[in-house]
Image 1 (cartoon, rainbow, N blue to C red):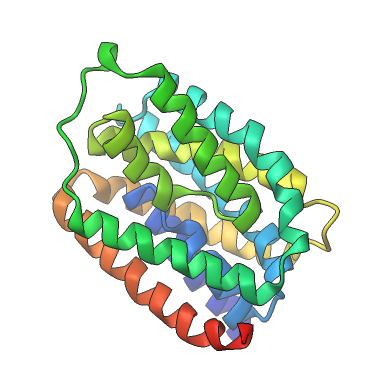
Image 2 (cartoon, rainbow, N blue to C red):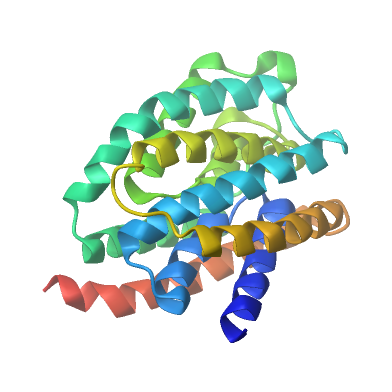
Length: 251
């Protein structure tokens, strides 16, 4: 029973992060499945992609009803990511579990610092959005999605704001569509790597639905700058913990 309640609590938190910030699901899910549920990093990667993908798809529907979702950008960005995520997933099985966790943490640390130190540029009008920036940014995120097993929200939102030029509100909603697309491609690419933890998947997704709904409702009531800073701080703290725990194992 304790394990069930832990899964429900974690699932709600992961869904809440996705609905509120358009990211953070994999940042929470992979470490939670490894450290709290007891999965190996490879199994956690596969289960994480399924959990985050399902919750993101539901969150996208909630944001669509609020008008904060750009389908054109989502399909272009996500389509480019899917094309790269599937073949990139094959590289994950060739890397050691410790290296995967260290690479995951290093990427989190870099993105967290970027969110704090760099101001987002002014939003670009929809008709002036650059097609090549959308496609190249999506392909880069898809590459990392396949290798590291991350849905990419903590990469997609900064990319949509700083590279593509979407307003932060649209970036949050649009990122959920992209996360769902990339997670699906990455999940299919990992199907042969190991068994899927179905019980954990059901618990996390069920609780995540409630969390995603609550997060999406809160997204328009809190200042975007505060949310970005808090999210960046959380990413940095968790990245430092993962580096402290896994970096010595590489030597």
